[in-house]
Amino acid sequence: MEVNVMTRDTNGKNVTRMQLQTRIWIKDALMQLLKEYSFDDITVKQIVLTAKISRPTFYRNYSSKKEVLDDAITDIMLDYKEKFNQKNITDLHGLLVYCFQYFGNNHDYISIMVGAHLTGYLSDKLTRQFAEGIQDNIRTWRQWQTPLQKQIGIHFAFYGFLNVIIYWIATGCKETPEAMAEQTIEIIKNLV
Image 1 (cartoon, helix red, strand yellow):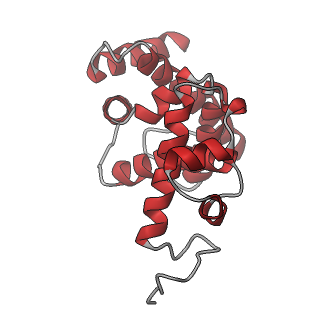
Image 2: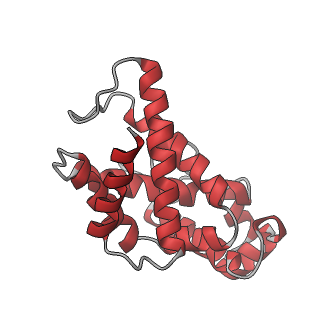
């Protein structure tokens, strides 16, 4: 299906290059503002001025600043998922090393959100997206048998691990991904 560049995307399926670029400008503007202001204090007007776009352009792409933040978080998860699916990870150690490598290399937005005290919101949003994405994707090293075990496993493992990643990013990613993976596995062994 050919997309007319003048057609407004209302369902998120047929996004033009200009719409994608405009959304990037808007998300980057929000992140830039989060370095100086709390999320609650940022206005759409500030985002528009920082992104150098018009107010109608903002509202053609987003209904609110919260939707911009949600889209930035979704971008992180979609990029992670796309790159993860290209890997053939078969064990927990490989998964942990990959996670630390990925988030160590792609931590700009996360660092800004942590600095803006949005850690809880970030964790909740990413955990929900992860839970939705993993429903039918059970790796051989996960032994979750029932739907309840899946939900507990997802929320306990992912939310807890995400907090480890956020801590690692917030402290400057000083340890290597391999060292973080090994230490995380030792902690998990000690939980049993």
